[in-house]
Amino acid sequence: MIKNVDVVIGLSYGDEGKGKVTNSLLKKNKYTHCMRFNGGHNAGHTIYKEDKILSTHAIPTGYLQDVQPIIGPGCVVSPRLLEDEYRYLKTRGFVGNKKIFIDKRTNIISSEHLAEDSNEVLIGTTRRGNGPAYRDKYARKNLRFGDFDHWKQHFFEVIDVYEELYGAKECEVLMEGAQAFGLDIDWGDYPYVTSSHCGVAGVLQNGIPFNKIRNVYGVAKAYDTYVGNKKFEEEDPIFEKIRNIGMEFGTTTGRPRQVGFLDLDLLIRSAKINGVTHIVINKVDVLEEVGVWKIVHNKKLLDFEQKLHFTRFITNTVIKEVDTMRKVIMSETPEEI
Ligand code: IMP
Ligand code: MG
Image 1 (cartoon, helix red, strand yellow):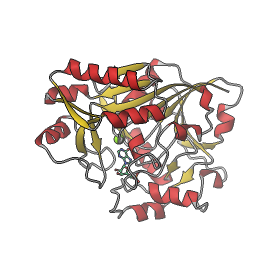
Image 2: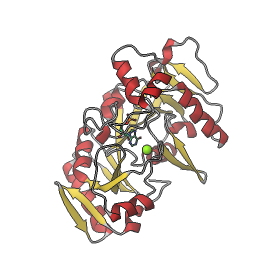
Image 3: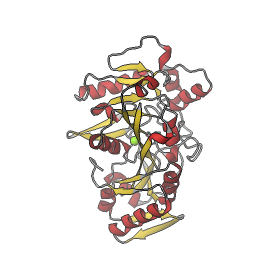
Image 4: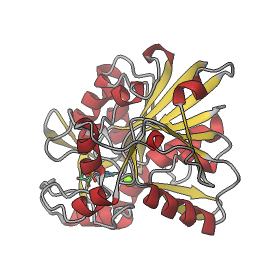
């Protein structure tokens, strides 16, 4: 049975550092499971572990910790790309004997989906077959992991997430989001969105009761970034500087990310709709190195003289405007929150 659930989601446009927050929470709290609930290989999580920098995509961060990793029914997965990712971790010495559980309802990204997405030019997708796979899922003509009898690879196992989470054992689950609310299929800037539900609504569809959710960690950065084909911000030497110091290049595709100042209006909206209880603002150290403290609030650009004014304004505004908010955490290192 499920005892408690914590959730990690992105509040902006992805690449906020959800992998770091997830990894940090897994070390700090006692969880039994870590479940990815949306998206597929389009995600790119960067994790600093034992002096190594690791990138994961569809494999839950919990795979690298002492918890059971699950890929939930809200995800789409290419067996081929999953195998590539497993091998990548294996050559770096980061796989044990444990298997990744994949729910039998999880939809498959086929080689046709990958081929179709590989020359996508309108949205600027990550070209990992995400959109075509979800389209076919909703058209009710896709294949799912459960369609293959006894599909037991050496590194994953198809399971029923209901049996796993509602048995006799008490479960403490960390739900790991991909992409972010600014890219959500309904709440993002359509059509410049991904094809899944990136917020708490997406969590619930994976077999999680709403009233078992304890903490919702919303992750953002001290500035915003976006990858895709919409025009995000005017080019400005300061954004170029942030991009280079913050190493803002896609984990999945290597594309340079467009940079802008933190949109506090978007952050507050995302936090309200998802009942966020904790906000983590990452990469404050990057902005410190750049030496500018600007944010957009009520559609106006605010300029602060020093870090303390910047962090205090964010903290006070968020606590005042979002009634579910309990804590605002400013993070200044790549390893920990
Ligand atoms: P798709 O999810 O590959 O279909 O891409 C749709 C949009 O979401 C594109 O603008 C992508 O760059 C963006 N996107 C998808 N996954 C991520 C992510 O993990 N981080 C940042 N942007 C993403
Ligand atoms: Mg990423």
